[in-house]
Image (cartoon, rainbow, N blue to C red; front, side, top):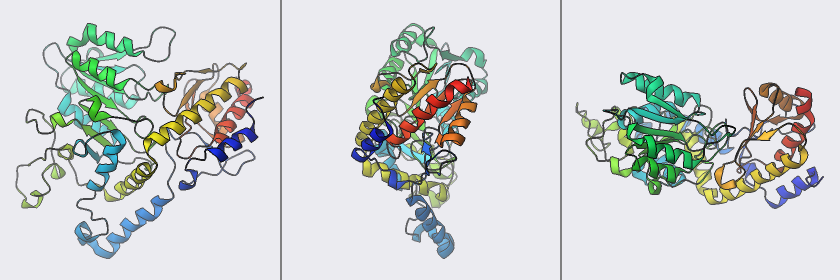
Length: 425
């Protein structure tokens, strides 16, 4: 066997990543103290700096009460502004185009208030058939809100028969043929189920050429793959911060609105206390004065203790940089792919994630054939200390996150999978 445990450890010594910055959960089984954690595409691990940073914000409340809005070491009133630069750099945007607020699906709804405006023949929302269920629920409810039948208004793009992933040319061809009925295109930048990285710039161009508005759900893309949203030009995007961005369960999410829309009076949106210009906020006037930035899409006073972990995470990404993380992601994911090819070549598994590194992020989705994916994942955890993510009926997702995953983690996953999959079947 070419790929040995000792070989994995040698790779870790040569290419160690930034594991020491994170808390690694203990193993729940097997011979190792730490878990082989490959579920960062579901929930990222906690940075060691998060606790102290969060306690600092809590201490400010204890010491200052309401005066913390202006006198805390990190004043609460402009706190959200401290996240803007890092978030903008992360997704390749101008600072004015980005705001951190709310949660992902709430943000998608607020953005669709502005960018899903069906009229005439243009009523359709185009999504991928394997979209995350929350996106499906959101677009169907938006269609109903506008008095439309969601079974007709929501169009689901499916892969070709016998294939698991969408081809860019098929999306582009659909838009060329049917685009005059599409009001909004809303796809996942990296598909949650298959790990496929979509060609965001090409599909965005095709959507605009068809006369549609274009948005992206970047829940599995932000912090996973390099992004250049301002250059690529989608109308909007949204992402969560608890997967690859390691900001904790239910963490605040991010929003991008392209600058061409920021000062456009024709763009409608919901408004609230934080939608108005901060320079005049405390004049307490009854009419909002929205700034020409994504801040205008905010509605409520930001939750400070939810913002601290996002700030901590963004500082790590600024320090390490997405180019370095992307390069290590390709090395780790490629190594895991080679392991699966060698360690379990005769086993009944299929990697449904694209083989081309340019078409995937830090994830391989493995179809196990017959048997329960959840049952297999439980055995991996409790017998081998390997934490991966299952999606029924038959997909196990492994995410070698470049910040903290190791080559040894990948080896442990492949080894445990080879030992258990036949028994589960």
